[in-house]
Length: 295
Image 1: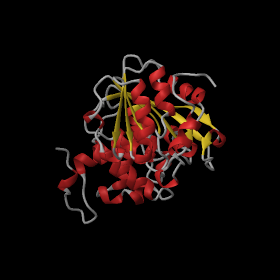
Image 2: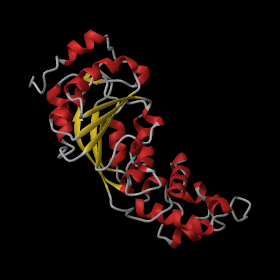
Image 3: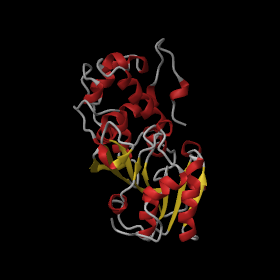
Image 4: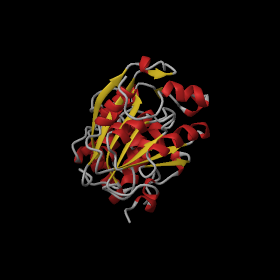
């Protein structure tokens, strides 16, 4: 294994601090620093960027990010057991690593990291989807981050990059592809993780678009997509009937056949639907629903 710093091997760090991975925290550690370095390189040049890392655990990816020249790395770690191991890394990089003990779901990245910023993480599997949606649905766009390089379970990664007319296509696909260029760039077998999960991992890169490719109110877009996919085997004329007095005419007006199902509608068409709702939303009783009007 290539030596990237003066710190001991990760397995020694794990043994020293008794850092057995906890399923309740979604932890799956990567011990191979060659592998963590290959993941870090997928994020491109790091020397001009501040990096936010979520769930660093014993710090394998953290060490690779620093060794590859990241301007500054801010790690958010919930597990108090990992803090001593991370402090050892901070001692080697006193001005370039900041360790924050917090739950990533509770923080706002801009409170800790300044532009230019990238998010790079082997995300805890149990909160990965929730974090991604949080980062994709900020009111302000473009976001504070320029790109994200994130590890997911392979099934989740495939849903992110899925195209219409496939079973994997859904809410994550639409939100990711609406605001970013999302690509699945690396698949990792279960054997490289400790403990060994039942599924493979996969790295997805997200390049933030300078503006929403198709304009839509983020709240309404999420609402119509969720409504459509909550009953994905039903026709849109059924799942979305509460939004319009004449749902079939509305769907046809933007080129969607009323019998179409959720997985067969493009990102562009979902954005058109959200814009229609913002102009002409009614509830199931046929009354104007002011809560859906754009402000």
